[in-house]
Amino acid sequence: MRKTTGEGNRHRVGIPYMNQEMSAILSEIEKETSDHALAQSIYFGPTALTHIKRLIEMGGSIITDTTLVANDIDESLLGRNGAKVLCFIDDPQVVSLAEQRRVTRAEVAVDYGLAVPGPKLMVVGSAPAAINRMITRRQHEPMSDVCVLAASTGFASVVQLKERLMDSDLTSIVVRGKKGGIPVTVSIMNAILREISKTGQSTVV
Image 1 (tube, rainbow, N blue to C red):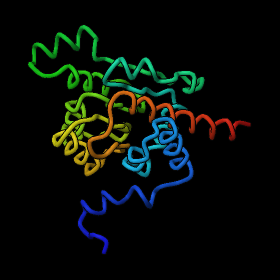
Image 2: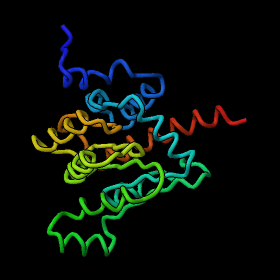
Image 3: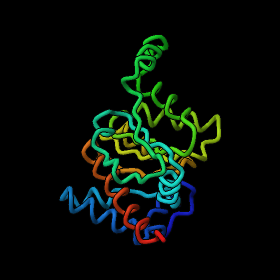
Image 4: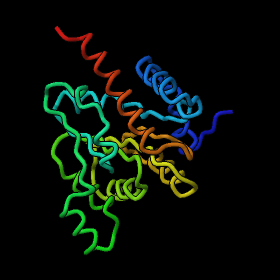
């Protein structure tokens, strides 16, 4: 029997919203990682891919929580409208502010990322504190121009944070459970961009 609670419905929306693009992305991730369970654990918010397509069309920003992810995203797939990959984690001002506030660099980097104009994809492959910061910010302000890819790996606290993100109204793509990490994040990101690039090419006049 289907649950009728809000939480139950939120956690089941991945299947009804699965479409051909999402299936192709998951198939590519599974092929690349040889991990069937990983592909099965990835949740797509119903408007996540639309948001990323719009970001690329409008020259928006993909903002990562680590330079390792930023460096391995295939920027050749971002098109010619000015979309870019940014990472603030090593920015001297971020480092200084984190020390002053006695918080993590990841939290301050999120604040810097959210201040960037235009549509954004916030990519979290390492720092759970970044996920928590975005959930907290959303409780106090609108974030309609933000999509979050959450693929941090870890145990109970990280798993719970990812579930909280799914339970929020933030547009998101989430690797549920304990799976994730930097290589997984890069694999997901590039698979998404490749699929969007294919569909974009097919509609070019």
